[in-house]
Every structure is written in C-alpha cells, then in structure tokens.
Length: 112
Image 1 (tube, rainbow, N blue to C red):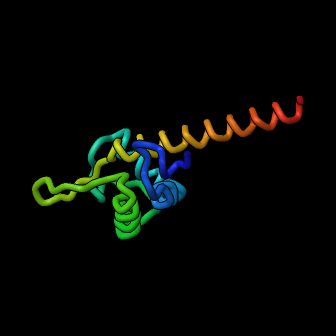
Image 2: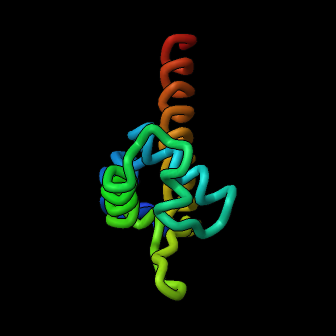
C-alpha cells in the first residue's frame, strides 16, 4: 500500500512537508502550538523576520493546512491546526514502518 492509499493520510503530502521544511515556518508553528492563538505583531515581536515576511510564511502554513486565522475585534489571530499535524505524524509513521519492513526483508535475504 502506498502512502497515498493509506486511510486518513493526505493525498498530497508535499505541501505539508514543504511548509514544515522551512526553519522560520517551523519556528512560527512551534510558537503557535505552545502559545495558542497569536497576532502577526506578537509572532514578529523579537524576531529578525519582518511582519510582512511573517505574513507570507503564515500564508504558506495556511495553504498547507497547518494554521488557520480568525478575526478577534480588529486583529487577525493565527492558531495551529492540530489535525494536519496528526496527518504529518501518521504519514511519517507509515514511512517508518515501510522502511522497517524493507530492512527486515533485506536482513532476511542476507541471512539466508
């Protein structure tokens, strides 16, 4: 069974892992997971990254389904989307199992 055929896994995981592969986006996601919903002002505070750059990174994370935004008064707040993180975890677990199975087959072949 391929990862795309596995139940509950995203059909196209490339945008998910592409979004997670950038250090700045990963840092933003970690902050949102730890601190709950935050504004762009709060996310860019104390960061060498500009507000405009933070906004662009959040849009990439949003397109990958990793974060979502909502309005609270005059501010737009961003929060992590745990469901998509679960997708990533399940996808990585599937890949890990596939590698374990392949290594077991190789070991069996070498030992026979």
